[in-house]
Image (cartoon, rainbow, N blue to C red; front, side, top):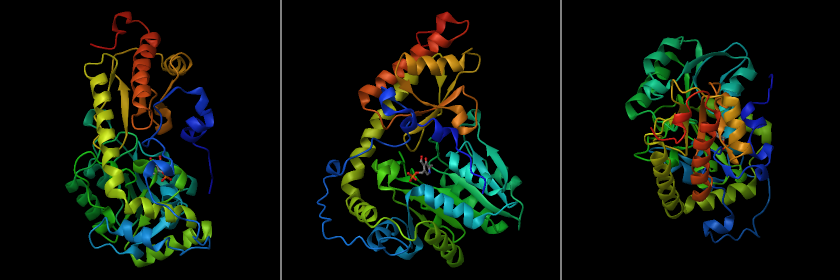
Amino acid sequence: MRYRRMPIEIESPEQLGYDTITNNLSESSVADRRLSDLGLDLDLDELLLCYGDHLGDPELRRLVAAGGDGLHADDVIATPGAAAALFAVATVVLERGSHAVVVRTNYATNIETPRAIGAELDLVDLSFDTGWSLDVAEVAARVRPGSTRLISVTCPHNPTGTMVDLATLQALVELAERTGAILLVDETYRDLTHGVRLPIAATLSPRAISVASMSKAYGLPGLRVGWAICREPRLHEALLAAKEQIVICGATLDEAVAAHVLAARDRVLPPILDDVRARLHIVREWLSGHAVFEWVEPTGGVVGLVRVRPGVELDTDRFYHVLLAEHGTYVGPGHWFEVDDRCFRLGFGWPTRHELRAGLRGLTSAAGEAMRCQPDVVSGQS
Ligand SMILES: Cc1ncc(COP(=O)(O)O)c(C=O)c1O
């Protein structure tokens, strides 16, 4: 493995220092929560802090499995966050020289871990002009039947917030089955779907692995509880072996708390979703007719990839500098996702609504200050 620190981690707000940012629009989850926010009747004093079940807390796995047709608790392997599940999947499925087809943009790890392994990556670049949509024919054209090991997609997508439809998901599953590849679907934002949720991909085929976690929708990234769902016995065994070699088992305390949260999901999640939709509306209004910025409206999650309209001349270095230095506002610049800095990820779920509005105003003002020769386009509205 050849590890390299990724810009998204080096420049993350927690590394920069939260106290240097007033309006943090760079986060990819809803606001972080305290246990007291969740109204759980937790009594963990008697919880034995033993090495737990290596697959993960049985109740937690039962609750995760209950979310998908035909899933069994033993199909679920709990991991320290989705990050560890993604790492386990990459190291189980790929080795140096293996061929993988990976969508870009993407959650950076989904590209970087296969790279660190030394896999041969075929990147399928999504484009604003096609609504960031995933063209299965383009994926299929890159897949080498019998040789490609991994097809890796994220849905709902980070950083665009877009989703594939059911027919596309089914076509990806069929492609994996036909060519012998494994389909990884990073479903970390699935509980934040704004419309109808897609089925958990692992329910559709033993060749599909689903990954998700408690981090984004529940605002509990500090729990470090995620999971991989896999119905193919040999893959499942290898994923468990990977987990055992990294951590043996998950944190007993974290998994117990996560199980309590999932048990209360029908009470906890709806207000979060209502709040996310209201925030989406705030961003929609800000962007409506904006002279400088545009986006493809997200259909899931709490991030979107905003771009500077073609033809607008913007000094991007100055823009990001002014944005933070003068407007206290931080977003995720394009290079976090291997695209031009004329795009940035805007996270609308994490700041307070007041900070979100102030951050959006800051974006408009910073753009005005960083525009090269169109001083008339500074009010933000076209
Ligand atoms: C798409 C996606 N997958 C996985 C992760 C990892 O999250 P965690 O390890 O906290 O579950 C993230 C975090 O940003 C993400 O955006």
